Each structure stands twice: as C-alpha cells, then as structure tokens.
Image (cartoon, rainbow, N blue to C red; front, side, top):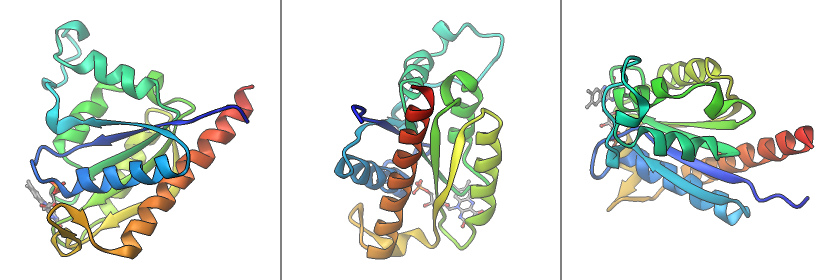
Length: 184
Ligand SMILES: Cc1cc2nc3c(=O)[nH]c(=O)nc-3n(C[C@H](O)[C@H](O)[C@H](O)COP(=O)(O)O)c2cc1C
C-alpha cells in the first residue's frame, strides 16, 4: 500500500532527564525502523499554559502548533510518568486541549514510567481518558516500574523493555494501516 504512517510521540514529563521521554523516543526509533515517519511532541519543552476554555487558542502559547502536530498523526505513542498513582499534570493539561479532532481514527499506544512499582492505574487512567477523545487505543502497552534500574546515562538498558516498546510501535502502525484501508 502506498502509505507511510506518521507516528507522533507525546511525552508528559517536565524533567530534563526524563525516563518517559527516553522510552517514547525508543518507541519512535522502533517506528522508524518499521518504516514510519515520526515526530515527537515533548511537552517538557513546550510553552503550554493551564488549559482554560475561556482563553482563545491563539493566546495559549504553543497549543495550536502542538495540536496540529497531533492532528497530523496516523498513530500516537503517549508517555507519562506515574504521579500519585495516575498520570502527570503535564500529560493531562495537554490532553484537555485535545479532542475528537486530534484522536478520532488514530491508533494510540500507552507508556507509563514509575519510580516505584505502580504502573497499572496510570495506564488504566490514560486508556480511559484516551477513550474520551475517541482514540483507538491498542492493547499493547508498556509500564516501566523502578525506572532508574533500567536506564543508564539516559539509555534504556533492558532488552525486554526495549522489545516491548518496539511492540507498541508495531501495534500502532498496524492499526494505522487498518484505519487507512478502512478510509479508502
Ligand atoms: C509528584 C510526584 C508523584 C509521584 N508519584 C509516584 C507514585 O505514586 N508511584 C511511583 O511509583 N512513583 C511516583 N513518582 C516517581 C516518578 O514516577 C518517577 O520519578 C518517574 O521516573 C518520573 O518520570 P520521568 O523520569 O519521565 O520524569 C512520583 C514523582 C513525582 C514528582
């Protein structure tokens, strides 16, 4: 099929040496190896005020440009740190700007990174909020517990986790092809 899917990563961490950012980058590298184009919306580098429905989007810093980049995606890999057994406010704040226009007919894979042992509840919370914008969330997902054990100098050192991030990339690409076929 004459179709090159665009996979966009969205990282919901502000931390300069974020493990989540590295995990999302790894998934994007896997997507490129699988033949996709990629883009990375790094919310830690964005000027994004707290979402306010009364504010004109043109006055909301980088919001309009970031939404356009997600809207262009055929597939999205969304990563968030675990904050208090849920996703981060950085992920959520951007998510509140998003809606059906960004995610309808778009496959989504989820990545959660935790300093401790809890990954199930943030993954579930992300899955529910992604359903709220009609994203097609694939079953494949990655939760990284005790994250500092698996990264050295910003590099993911665990082969099993690396393979699972690649599987998420493959799954959202497969789903993007199915959407493309369905829409032809
Ligand atoms: C406000 C806050 C709340 C956190 N809550 C949890 C938690 O409930 N469970 C957990 O395992 N780790 C928790 N952590 C640790 C983060 O998940 C961990 O530092 C993670 O690596 C952050 O992701 P990042 O490296 O992408 O920024 C918390 C960290 C912060 C700053």
